[in-house]
Each structure stands twice: as C-alpha cells, then as structure tokens.
Length: 83
Image (tube, rainbow, N blue to C red; front, side):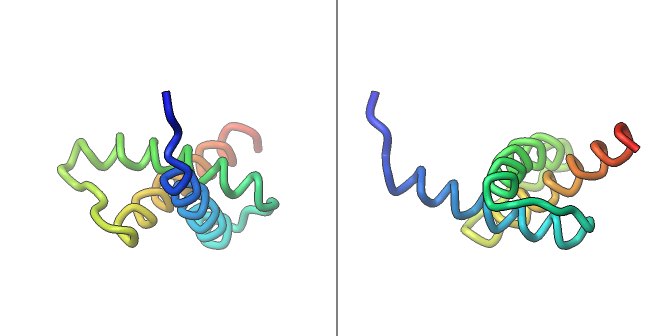
C-alpha cells in the first residue's frame, strides 16, 4: 500500500484550517495537533451528517466548510457532555 504524500499533506492542511475555524467559531482552545485532529474528524462527521440532506463538499473550499461544520458539531457535543 502506497501513501500519496500530497493527499496526506492536503488532508492535514484542510484539517488544521477547519479545526482552527471551528475553534474560533465555537470558542474552543487548542494547539495545532488538536486542530488537525478535530478538523479531520470533523470532515468525517460533517460528510456523514450532511449526506442525509444531500449536501457534499466539492473543491477545496467545500471540503473545508464541511469539515468546519463537523468540527463545530464535535465541539458542541463535547461541550454539552463535559460541562
């Protein structure tokens, strides 16, 4: 199995941007690693949730917006559960 380095770097950059934006929107605090993880998981959650209403992210901006939506959902659930 080969890993496409470019795809991995793009996923990390999208994850970092999405995690940072979600943290900014939701008032979260965290470093780069947390933002990347949150953004990547947010992309999965956002894609899953938005697929129910027929929305999918296309292009770089679309993928970032879907990941931001999912990351905001994750932050919101985390704040609700651990408050």
